[in-house]
Length: 337
Image 1 (cartoon, helix red, strand yellow):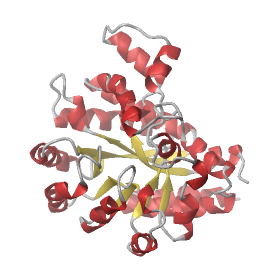
Image 2 (cartoon, helix red, strand yellow):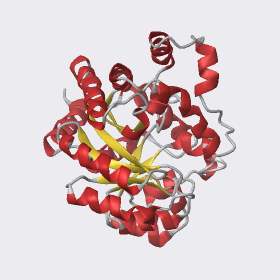
Image 3 (cartoon, helix red, strand yellow):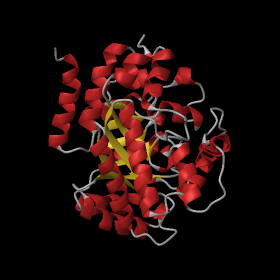
Image 4 (cartoon, one colour):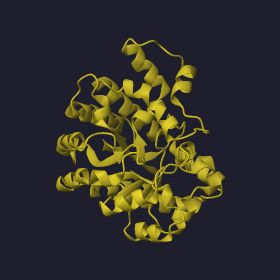
C-alpha cells in the first residue's frame, strides 16, 4: 500500500477545487476582522465551516458555504483567498491547480465580473511567484441562475480566456435544475471557444451524465451515478472525457453511502481518465494527500497507479500545450539522477 510520505511528496494535479469551500480558517478569521465582523475563534469557525462525515445530504453540505462567501465580496478578499489556496496546494506538491468559483456569488457589494476575475487572477499569480505551482481559473455558471445571467458572465469571462480563465463549469443542484435546460449556456461557451466541465451524476441520475456528454462536455465533475452502467462507462472512456473524482466530498454528500462502494477502481479498470481532487478543502477538511490516502487505505489505490492518474489528469487539464509540457517534465524530473 502507498504510504503518506509518497502521497504527499509526489507531483500532483488538482482539477476540481472550489475557492469558496477551500478558504483556510485563519484567513477567514483575518478577513472577518478586517471587515469589522464579530470575531470567531478557530474552533467555532471549524464548527461553522467543516461538514461532518455523516452529512444527511448535499443540501446540508452546501450550508457550510454561507460564511466563506461573505468573505469573497471584496477585491482584497478574493485575491487573498486565491493566493492562500494555491500556496496551500503547493505545500503538498500540487503542481497545477484549477480553481473554480461563481462570479455571481461575489457581487453583493457591487464588484463587476471583470473586477472579480482580475482579483482572483492576481492572487493566483502571486502564489505562482512564491511557489512551484501553475494555476488556471474555471468560472462557474450556476443552475439556479437565469440563462441570461449565466451567458452575460461568460461574455465577460471570455476576455480572460487564455489570460487566467481556462474553462467554465455548471454547478448547483442537478436534481432541481436538470442539465438539459442549459443547452444555450454551453452553445455560448462553444461560440466563445471556451472549454467546459459539468457537475453531473454527483447526487443526480446517470441521465445527467448522458446529457452532459450530448452537450459536448470535456470533463464531468463527480460522475458517481455512472457506476454500474457498462455502456456509459465505455462511452466516457472511448471519448476520453475526464472524470473529476472527489472521494471525501462524495461520501459526505451521500453520492455514496459506504466508502467500500466508491467506484474509483471500477472507473479506473474501465479505462476512464480519472483525476483525484478535494472539491472543497476546508468544508471537507481534506487535501489531495488525504484523498489519495483514503483510496489507498480502502485498498483501491496502489503506488504504481500514481503515474497513470497524473498523466490522465494532465490529459484532462484545461491548460495550454506549453503548460502541459512543463507539467510533464515535473513528473519526469522525479526520475532524474
